[in-house]
Picture 1 (cartoon, rainbow, N blue to C red):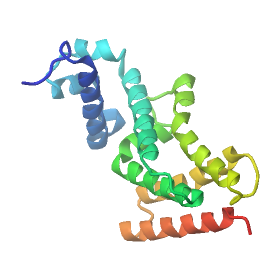
Picture 2 (picture 1 turned 30 degrees about the vertical axis):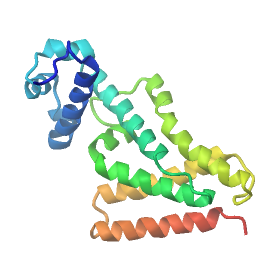
Picture 3 (picture 1 turned 90 degrees about the vertical axis):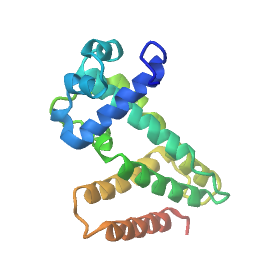
Picture 4 (picture 1 turned 45 degrees about the horizontal axis):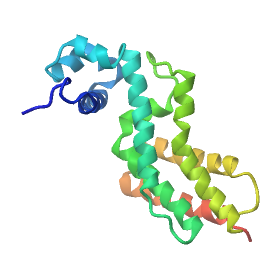
Amino acid sequence: MARTPKQDPRFFRQLILKKAAAMLHEQGIHGLSMRKLAQSLNASTMVLYTYFQNKQGLLNALYLDGFEQLRLELERVPVDPDPIVHVMELGRAYRRAVLANADVYELMMSRSLHGFSLPEESIKQSGASFRVLEEAVAACIGAGMVRDQDPKPVAQMLWGTIHGLISLQLAGHFVDDAAAEARFELTLETLKQGLLNP
């Protein structure tokens, strides 16, 4: 028997987000509506409005949930005894997470999507996933493998580089997935060599 909102509100909230992400994937941000989402869940729009005030609230929840899932994915990466290996594995985990959730990723990373505006508080909350990488970079600096400097700008440089490369792949700028992966691995190795103390 299916769980109802009254029986398990937390489960139903996650089900709404899952259905909304699927709709976003299939129809884009303009095809996502509270009415169609309610129909796909065999629920009333009033039920949805008890969870999310409006479409903006739903999109904001998708944004925050996307970053939470990304943080959890990064935290699942085993900490390697070699700190620089850990940083590289975080990069690979980031790419896997993005490719598995590309439509929500676009929502997470673009502030220019028509019809979606982010509260500043949500932007602050999303930083938790970035701190996983920042701490890994700090471990490299602490081990003397990377020049002694502030880990935050180094982590931002790493994140920005791989974000750009993944965005190129999602936009279709590589011949195929194998070519995109090869370019990604080359970029990781280049970043690694650039970071290491001579």
